[in-house]
Amino acid sequence: MTAPPEAGYFGEKLAEGWRLVAIEWERGAATSGPSVEDIPFGLRVASDWPALEENPDEVQVLLLMLEVLVQDGPLSTAAPEDQRSRLPHPRQRAVDANGPVLSCCPG
Image (cartoon, rainbow, N blue to C red):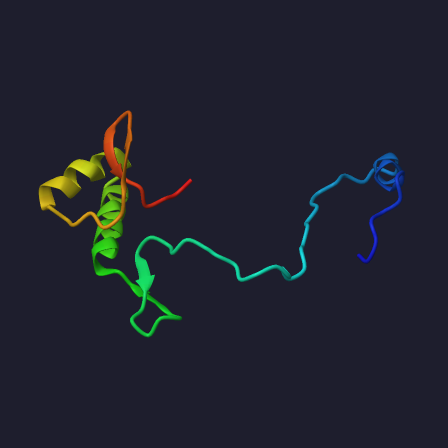
């Protein structure tokens, strides 16, 4: 679409028996400055700088969390497992009602 639909367009379609299934918005390329994004958990900036590479410590934590999920356990059990195995804690930890958990999923 190059222009938004007329004011009564959706009403007309509904009256004809159509039902709205989806609306998708797309924005053109940003024109202001470089974009800044958080580095995903499990990755780090590579020594050759513009690329990302796996962070072995964080990948180990992700694998531990996946193992807990595969065993159909709650992720809250991953923190005690993590502490018992003495994995490094490269990122800031968050505290919730279940105790300390890794803040690998920023929200």
